[in-house]
Structures are given as structure tokens and as C-alpha cells.
Image 1 (cartoon, each protein chain N blue to C red):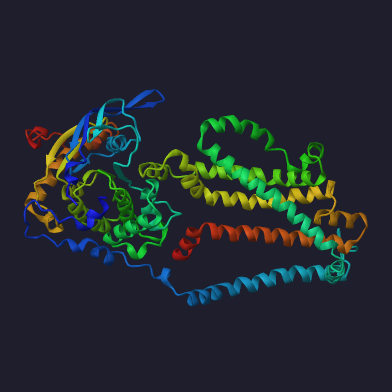
Image 2: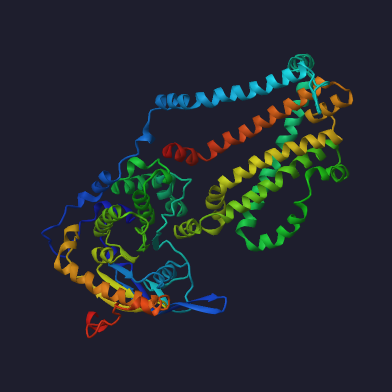
Length: 312
Length: 288
């Protein structure tokens, strides 16, 4: 191949020139003009120390933030505040904590959590797979867009909760219909963000890929998908939030088992501490899920974190 | 290995016309342009902004289908982008999700080269361009000049017959730009690949080129063809020579004429008072 010739090719000259510079200066001037960004080559230990130095304040403020809520809650329930908003029947934080220990004496509570998490994962990953694939195709091919978007636009404004009755009729068993409702909730944010991500791709990247011999069939996987990833992850984060909203609603309305069902049942049985416990559990699960997506984003898009560190 | 590069890479453009559809009909971007680049020759295309020089390059690259005329590279008609023509864009166009080395490997990968082999070649090329220590960096971690060097290396990796460069240094600051010109002329001196180079920088065009085509304001036509008789290899010191300065003045006069022509419609009459659009007896004919 000619590539090797670059190294071997002699320096051809039309005429000897008195001011000719030797060919070895090929790169040297740039080294002086463009110094290595020092921030990029910091050793790992130092990086950890810097990270800790940067993180202690956010961590402290985080503790203060959650502590303030707990204290306010504790005081409000301790004095049974009644200022239009009433705390008479609200359990104290301590009562909720006791309830947490109590419910964990039987496996039922953890089973409820496990069932909800399974529903979320099935619905969410189904939505992610179909939303991303469909989004890439719609974003890339006009014919695909014109064919599928009108139908999708009709379904999009229907909230996932409104699907509950229809879903129960559609699917053979309750479990599938709840997963389906979770899927519907996550699907549209993921789809729309993927389409937007494909549309936002700099056309010069597509041209560059074509010049370098990338055939159309490899374009989706090699170029469109990685280029759209930042937008796709925005869609995944939003989709995960909506998936939880939809799941809890579905579990409350039609469910058996699951953390939404647990919370609603507690209301029916007038078990105040369990209501609060259910809510907090939902909050923590949602937090873990969005944390998982942020972690996945860092792993899947290493160039994003590399850049932000370099720029800091 | 034989040094047969110089026998390949002949660009021939004849009577090329490019029209774009507009709301009210069509706009003529390029009008009956004929030009050629001989194997191993460095040719620049220079003209006022909006004259259609990038459009012309995009047609040769295969992104735009011309309305009339013919284009060939080594007697092969152009019908879309192809690996025989490497393209370097002004906006770098590196894939941000790939490391520097993966960017360079991409073309080789598309041609079905095995991983170990393409890795070896990419490292060789990056080493020659002085970029090997940055092989695992992502493009956004690099300066503009380095990005563009990676862009050039990536375009060269698949051994194209010709290199098409669309204002590759247009986004760089003046100092980096000068260094990049030196690097490019050095690289080209070794490779002797045919280059079609688009620029609006007169010094840049003269410093790098064997020949320069000056284009008119829209619709773009070839206004003049100027040979650059400066010896090679080119060095920055030559930019102070009388021969260089004379060439700069010639090209500047040609371009000024066209810039004024294209701005005439935009300026009020008073705006042009004192600006001479008339080159007198030393008009275009004198230069050509």
C-alpha cells in the first residue's frame, strides 16, 4: 500500500533551494506551538484527591439538605401542626423507620420491590430497544418518517395511565399489561430524543464517513448511533422517570404486588406509616434508576467525560 | 516499492455547471468551469466568498451532482464519494466518539482491513505526523491545529489518488495556520499526491501551490490561471521574496476586482467612491 511510501518516499525537489529546511522538521514547530494539555495527564491518585477536594462541599450540602427535610418533618409531626396543611395523621420519621424494620421481617416487602423493579426493567429496556431503533430509522429515512410519524403522533399525547383499561383488555394477563403501560411511558421520550439526536448530527460527519468508504448499511450503526448517543441518553433519563410514574399508577389501579400496590393498599388499610414508607421507597428506587442511567452514560460515552475533565 | 504515485491522480473538470433550485427558480453557483490537476500537482482554487469554490470541490468529492459538464479522476467519471478521493473539511469532521487512532483507522476498517494491520498502519501514520502520543485522546481534547492534522492523516490513510481540501485551515488562528501550511507542504513534498485546495487566503494559496485558479464572483467561473514558479521545498522565508510578493499583488488585484463586483449590489453608490474597480491596461489579460 502507498501508506508505507510516506515513510520511504524521498524528498523530491524541483530545484535546490538555499533556504531549504530538512524534512525532519515535519512536526517540531507544532510541538512548541501547541503544548500538551497538562490537565489530561494527571496521575490517578492526584485525580482522586482533586475529586475529593471538589466533592466535600456538595456532599456536606447534600446531607444538610436531606437533614433539613427530616427535621422539618419530625417537628411538624411532633407538634401535630395544623396550618391549613395538616400533620395530625402523618407518621413521624421514627415511626416510618420502625415500620421499615417491621415490614422486613417478612419477605413480602422485598418481593414487592423486586416485582416493581422487574416490571420497570422489562418495560424500560423494551422501550429503549424499540425507541432507539425506530428513532434511528425515522431520523435517517424520510420515507420511514412519513410512514410512521403520523400514527405515532396520534398515540403520543395519550398518557400511559390512560392506557390502563385498554391494556387490561389487550393483554392476556395483568403482569404483561402493567409492563406494557411502563413501556408506553418510556417509549415516547426515548423515541423523540433519538429522532432529534439523529437530526442534530453534523452533516459533515456523514460526508466524512461516506468519503472514507462507509456504505449506507453501516451508517446507522457506525455513525448515526454513536453520534446521537448524547441525545439518546437524555431520552433514556426522561423515559426512566416517566416509566416510574406509569408503573406506580398502573400498580395502584390494576396491580397485585409491586411497590405502588403496597402504597395504595396501605391507604386502604389506613396504615399511615406504610404510605410514607412506600413513597420513600419509590423515591429511592427512582433515584437508583436514574443514577444507573448516568453511570451507563459515562461508561458508554467515555469521550464526554474525558472532554469535561480536560476542559475543567 | 515503485514511486508510481505521480502517474495517478489526474483530475479533469470540463465545462462544469452547477445550478441549485431556489424558491423562485434556480441559482447558478458554478458556470462552465474547466480545470485540471496533473498527477502529483498542488493546485489551489481561490476566489471571493460565495463564489462557488466549495461547491465545485463538493462536486469533485461526489457530494453534488453537476448540472452540466464532465468530471473525471484518472479517466473515471465521478458518481458519488469514493476512496480514490480523500477529503479534508474546514470543520475538522472528526468522529468525536472515536479516539484519534480509531478515527484514522476508520477508512481502513471500512475497506475490510484486519484490526492488527490497521492499528499498525494508523500508528505509523500518526507517528509520521507527530501525533502518536495523542493516539488515545478524543478529538475534543485536541487543539484546532491538531484536529486538522488528524483530519489530514485520516484522509490519507486509505491512500487516495487525490486529496481535496476545503479551506482546511480556515478555522485556525493566524499563527497555527502558518505552521499548518508548513506541515502540509512538507507532507505533500514526501507524498507527491495530487491536491485540490480551496482557500480565500492569497498567501496560503501561493505558498502551497504549483498553480492557482482564481474564480470570479457568483456565478463562479475561472477568471485566471497563475503558475507559481517558486522553488521547492517551500520555506516560510520565501514569503518575503520579491517573486512571492509580486505574485501576491497580482492575485490580490484579481480578487479585489471580483470582491468589488460581488459587493456592488450591496453597497450604496457612495460606498464605492474612491475605490477603483478599473485595473486599466493592466487588467486580467496582463496577469493571464
